[in-house]
Image (tube, rainbow, N blue to C red):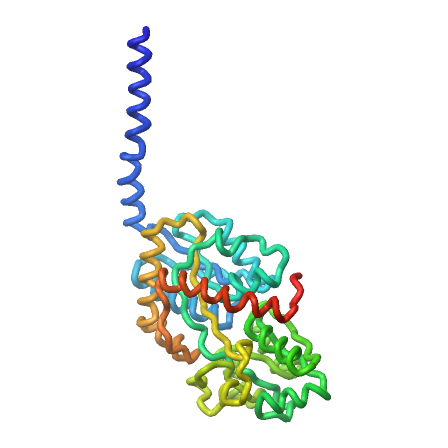
Length: 331
């Protein structure tokens, strides 16, 4: 009996040892076959803005390259937290991704008491691309042509300043203007750019900030007037608009830097992350990718997985203290 029992135990041990050996090639084959079914990219802002436009164009390129359908699922709300939380809870099997802005993963942690997810633990960054220059504009009824004139105007007139999300670069810039110059501009937060520009066209906002393409219809109609490019370089689509630095606004809050990020749930296989990163970077050179980047005035190519992961740490170190310093209370 003892020998029999030992034999049984040896047999069970053999099964235990053999399990991973057998499973490893199977897992490797499954990852090599990726994608074997449709891929969903959750966009945590409404259709019509920069985040959505790039996701759709790049998703089309990924679909063309892999032969598998790429589904764009818009889940706006709570400054991007609703869509991000949905992806954070998804299986890390390589078939669900999040396309978002850096503020969702960086600024929001200082803006909300409960995000519904952990930006650092629940995601792995796949790729990231500079969101480009996001001009500050005013409604045609506001008689100003530069940022200094807007400050002077806001001291004696009511100004509603549009922001596409709580804690966004637009929010930071407007809040810093309030703090630095003793203004009381009302910062109006939206679920994305599209509804913000609708209100701007209706005249309920006096100022706002966002992507050139998303505001283009209002620019063409003459409903809005660009007054500053909060960047170190001028906007390619609006080369005559001076930067904030050129206008003497040199504080870090007036020089916007951020990116559009593609992320996957934590636990997504490294091989899949690498493959999707390569596909996303290559999408910038595809026909739909080039057209969309040109329409939004974007010139910088996407960063691969390793690069955006390192830049994420840099962004956190610079932006989080900035929000804390502005005294914005978490909701």
